[in-house]
Image (cartoon, rainbow, N blue to C red; front, side, top):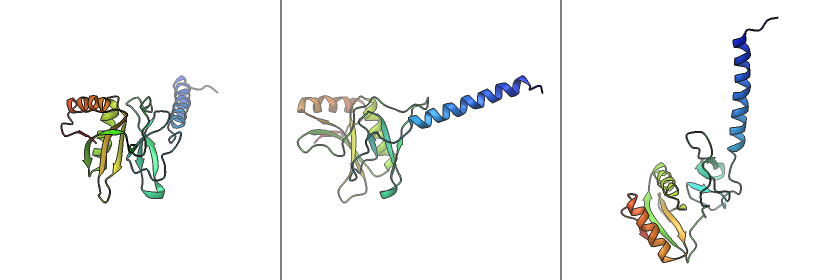
Length: 158
């Protein structure tokens, strides 16, 4: 039986596609260490530095990896915490009622090379987005300057 060359090429291409999809799927698992159960942020950067976004609600929450335009996981970022430590400083950049806007702000903070976090405002239906935490006022001031220059003119240290 003679198999046309095009059928062989298509067959090998399909095998490559399946392998590519399975390797991409292997790369796109949840966080190495999931956030604590009380974590309310819309995004989470795990201990390996990979960025994940919250999907679902409550017990059905899943963490979806953010990918770049080459479909590779966005990694190499500073891990976030569920909330800033009580004695450390953060730079608040905004409070967002629309979750997608909070996520976009958090992603832009990490693109600047800063750790980002968010928490649900107590008793409110919006996310407070911040950069940090920072161990010193000098580092917080430097981040504030960087964020104001990036367009977050209402940012402040807290």
